[in-house]
Image (cartoon, rainbow, N blue to C red; front, side, top):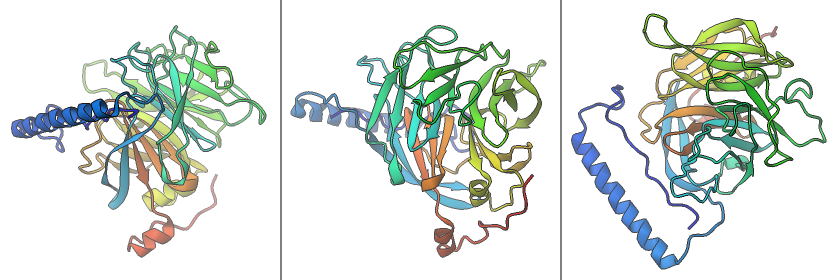
Length: 363
């Protein structure tokens, strides 16, 4: 037994429509369920003798979620022990996440009881299976112990974090302590120190490389000077200097996760035409999901995925377009939710026409 599965945690105090406060009885039932589950798992461990040291994922939930009027199947994988820190208080969560060449890379923040500065790698395959993973120790980053808030891969071959076709993959990570500095981690040199950039001076929650624009993009949390609700903006960064560029645009409040997708995949999800070569998926802490083109135009948004209760706190998002998979990183839930997107043919069979749209010439 490589892992003790943690049941999804439920909060009645978020004040959200999908999680009402009037749920004392529900909380009691959930506590009773959790107690029974822990007792059952403990009994299994006693019978088995000793826990295996192998890394093995655990499916802890499945069902469907609603997005833009369509239903998608989703599988929840518990990842709490995948950093393999061998500490009783260690809880690994998907704070940062990116998909590159068939590999899903996942990081946690810098807290000592989280990932112990380890980058976890999964090879999900065609079905999004997270059964097997490996980890790589990361060295010191811009502010000491490295635990990226967000991660991405510079696929251009040059600039900050660029690498050649015969080189090991470099991960560009965002420092998780508000300095806004970036670091580069060489996956071929475990434990090596990062190559840091100068601090950007803005509080960022995630980073993604935009190949069509040859620059980085970041999610900035903007505090209201009058004490009102925080807002979020998407900012661009020069890929060589990591300096902030002038163009930015407002995105969903509470935005935490960011990834870049092709226009074709954006059209598949939204049923609308996208006029830029690439687009962004933005996720918010409490289940918001939006798609913007790279000019800042909102293509479609949703404040919630519907009532898929396993989602607790989204912090990251990644996509495998070849296999039509979306990975949602859930830090508080210590989980990755794998969403399967039907192909256009399957959507047609289900009567969900209108997803494949005519493509106009892009600029």
